[in-house]
Image (cartoon, rainbow over all chains, first blue to last red; front, top):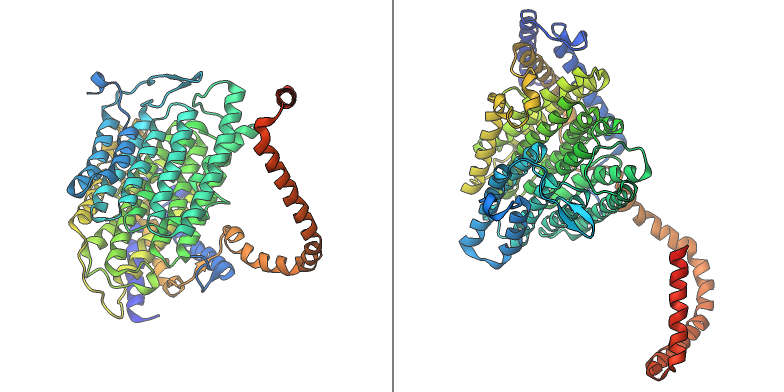
Length: 72
Length: 560
């Protein structure tokens, strides 16, 4: 990983950590219990976004082609 | 005015203006192009809410203009989109596109205000024609034809469904139903075709990017959202919509994450966002239906803005592929700002309109304890931020590019239209209460509360972490992703040559038989033609005999 990307990632992780800390100080109104626990959106966002990338990459491996559609 | 002349339909104003547009020239044409949407938007608000006038036509009680709250919400959104689109497209020279765009916008208003199934169907078809001409006017006839065929299919399904419904219930009234009979399933299928639901989602990303830089703005606003409106009216709480919606949300996200062309990426994301609306319609509670309407409203604004930014990039550089773009931010600051506001609104960043409408949908899901859909759509929201809030701006605007493009400023009218929509999106985002008179159901939804804002910020920053981590994987690559439309776009090309080879021996054998048969047929038709020429000399008795036979056959068929 090049230097600028590593720095950006570190900065984002620090911001995320600060947001999670802040989450302990507000009153959460969860609808399904777990979504009201502090930091839920942080780990769920990481997992959700990672799953989205995995799903798209898998789909791309199966159905992405390098050429344009013949009739486009 | 409406009192003295009777109610004037916003649909009629736009359609008549569209028909007149090619007849006027110069500044008058541009003035009419802009004035008609302004008048339509004013009428949306001037028309008093009520049941509407019943017009008796062939025994059907038609209500072509029935202003209710839902009509006003969608009428306002369609009106703003038409107004902003007309302002944006002022410098467009193609009069066919401009005229068709007005008729298209008028048909969308007609659907919003239609109070019966027959009027609804008429405007539905006018909308299909208007949108097809918008695509066609940019020169891609094959894509236009594919688009038209899909909508002919949708129209036939809807017509068959409406015919079955009218014959079963005896009335053309618009009423909420469940898909519990063949006729109603046909009706639902016809509407879902227009909504971009699977298996026929591919037409959206096939057709919309083929329109001109200004035409796509109109296309992004009307067809799919009019379908959402009709679903709210006819199929609220239909359980099948939950699953159609979820499938569309995932499909839109996956295809948008893989896509290279900006306008095709945005088209896939239309399908994804309409998926959110369909889930809400499928839920069916009062809050959920209001949330679906509100999300359609917000989506019309931010997707039109995104398409405007994409159109401005296309006009300035002649390019919309992410793999060929980059580093535009310095050269096109206003377009960059517009794209960011639109993208952040789609990704429901706090202080944008998308945050308000998505919060309402999530609140409706939570109130109904629809846990599966709540968690799935929250994950899709994180994925949506990846493709629209990070991947699109990074690769098109911010990443260092090899050669910086020429800074070409968009026309004043394009900038004004983008500024107008940016302002509307941010105003709604900062002051969600302005929407309460329009959608009173959302007054109880927590939007800008600390825990809710914090929740969304964590989700978005987490998605950003993943983006930076896997950046090389998300690099745009030229190419295409296979879809269901492979069945009619490519399969015939592969099958027909093979079929021709396979049937060659058979055709050779048939050719031997063909000549004598053809000779006899032509002799027969010559004789028949000669007899017809002499028909004046037929005997009266002979004519009476054949006429009686024909009538008897007709009566027999009718009796059966």
